[in-house]
Length: 417
Image 1 (spheres, rainbow, N blue to C red):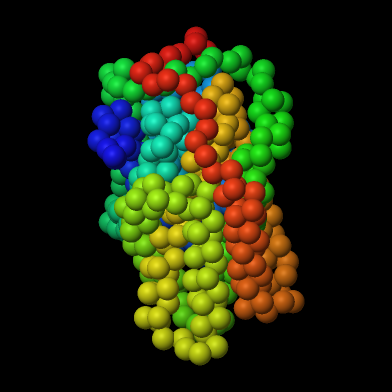
Image 2: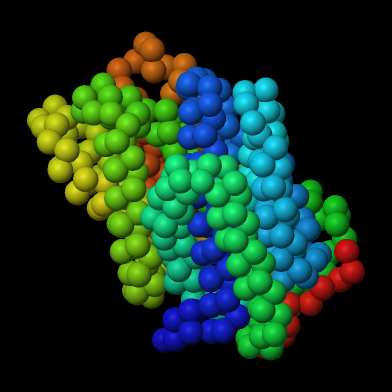
């Protein structure tokens, strides 16, 4: 079976996403680090990180609604261009009195990144045959890990050598590359691309939200992803406590562990397609959740036996692969089950809901961290993965079959916005 990356249109979308990930990861590291250097305040620095999450609540569903109506190629190009055009405002930052500029740019970049992600997921479902969705999503997920391995170090090095002007140049070049590559997809519209049904801008949002509960696969995926989002939010808060309180390490070791997880993600991205052909997306999702929960349980309880840092490097590498399997599996199920004319709104609503519940998980962990031990909270997070795996196994696996799909060979066609 031909891998999706052998198809010209999808390969260009993949490459565009890769450059976008480099730009986003560079900014995610460089901007909070610059604020920390400028203010020496962890609270103010955390505000910059939080601004990278909240805009998705509004803009992911908005992007989904737009993606159901606009030409996807045009939309991806405009979003990428907007990301690049926001960056020069950072050149006006001189001291702490200019922090509001960084806040606005961070919020704007996060909003556009959420819109790009939603539109990209719709494009994947439009460009790729149904039986190739897991492999395609895994390849797209590979970008996040490659972007982390490439963009984060670049962001830190460039900030250290050339300051914010260097970061602006790096980000601008990355987003320009994304826009240029996305624009080339239009030359290959006839290479197996499926027509996206046009829909009025706001009409059908209620139908899209209703379908999340009405359609069994979407309802199950929403429940599973909700639990995962809460668990991920808890992880953001508890991970540093795990490093400092349970392992007795510092910021350097925390950075190493988050970085090496991308190595496992690369392995997962390469192998997910093969596993999906044997298991199907629902079984891949369920197996990925169980594996992720099992490795997490070992990781969070291992400090009772050893704090040798090498052990945790190995564990964090291993856990990266099932993380990719989980994401690729549930996303393929959603792309397959969502009605084509409201697919963008369905994907946008789920992504927005996911980020909202992730913020809830952060809040829960933050409130409980002072009264409940870190290890107990981390094991509660493992419990969320186990419950999600059971839901996937009972609600999705028995019905894991190919969904309906329009015949291939039609172009991505726009209705005038």
